[in-house]
Length: 123
Image (cartoon, rainbow, N blue to C red):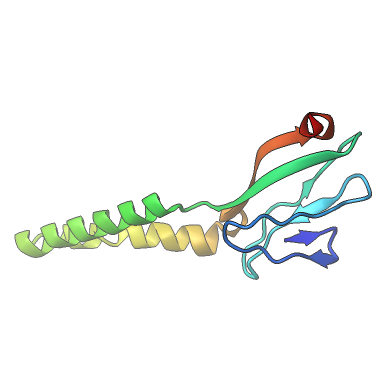
C-alpha cells in the first residue's frame, strides 16, 4: 500500500495494517508491482477509523469454476471427438488472461468494510 505517493506499507495475509494519518485528504493506492488500484482520497472532519479490504477481481470460487468448465469442455470434446468443444475449453483461460493482463486497473480493488467513528469506538 502506498500513502500519499511517498510512504510504502507492506500488506500481509489476514493481518491488519494500522496507519496513523495526521493530515486531511490522504491518498491511498494499492499495488503488487504490476497492477495498481485507483487512488482513493479519504476526507474526514474528525478523527475516524477506516477499515478496508484489498481484494482481487477473481476470487477462489471463480478460479475453481473456470477450472471445472475447462476440464468439462475438454473431456467432452475428447470423448465425443467434437473439436469445437476442445476449443471452448480455452475460454476460461482467455477470461483469466484478460482479467490479469488487459483489465489491469480493476484486478486489485480496495473495498471499504466499515467506517468506525472515534466517538463510537470509545463506548
